[in-house]
Amino acid sequence: MLDVCLLGTGGMMPLPHRALTSLMVRYNGSSILIDCGEGTQVSLKQQGWSFKSIDAICFTHFHADHISGLPGLLLTIGNAERTEPLLMIGPKRLERVVNALRIIAPELPFEIQFQELSEEEESFDVCGLRVEAFRVLHNVTCYGYSISLDRVGKFDAEKAKALAIPLPCWNRLQKGNTIELNGQTYTPDMVLGPPRKGLKLTYCTDTRPTPLIVSHAAQSDLLICEGMYGEDEKLQKALEHKHMTMYEAAEIAAEADVGELWLTHYSPSLIRPAQYMDKVRAIFPRAVAAKDRMETVLKFED
Image (cartoon, rainbow, N blue to C red; front, side):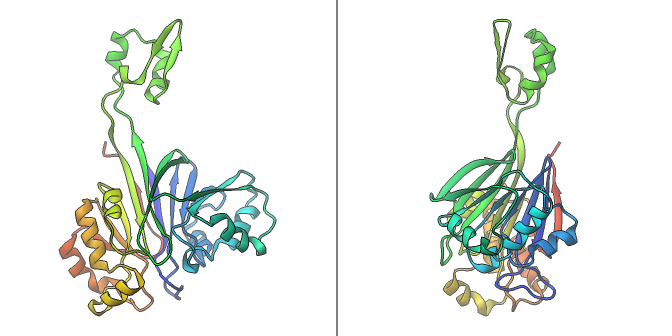
């Protein structure tokens, strides 16, 4: 299962009642953070989630409301006595930007490793999860992320017995390992059924609608997507500054056939997002106006 917490839902600047957008996903003792705006560690502290378990931080882009909380967070992680390397993923110039911010956090007890994105779409494994980065359409280079927990087919014990596969091999085969024992080779496909539905979360903000968002969000259990404006008169502003309205996000969710949509990255002028939700749900019924520190647990269907 995946623990998911949207630490903040604000765009541009923090407000007394709204933190800047940041997301944390926990799996098997590790955590992935996406974006780190000002005040992210305050939301983490309020949520009661650990700083030390953060093994990777993904950045969508380098605007201040998505990265300005990083120096303080790094110092806090260091004070938590972390010594293991910390992976950072983001657009080109990531290492340069982070090192510039680290002028006020120069000494840390752990190594920072960088993975800079350059392609339109990239896929890699992080903390036992499959992460897909895809470029979106903002006024600077910006990426969305899908995080997936794949699931192998069901183990067929009767088939394993019929094939006389030794019992000590069963667990490793179930985990997808090939085993050579006493001159015999045992492969997972000998005892596993077809792959089962896994878990998928997609996070996307600061963008106009693009086909890549739909294709990467397809069949996600949860899509967390920018809905910066709810007012009809703000569409032109969304077009000019390459942001998205709540209704455009709902159209993406409907086309991608996601399980649920959480709207986030609200404009400071959007005081009460909930007042626009009837119109949003007319487009996509399973939409939620997310609030700071909203959390859920994504679980396998069976």
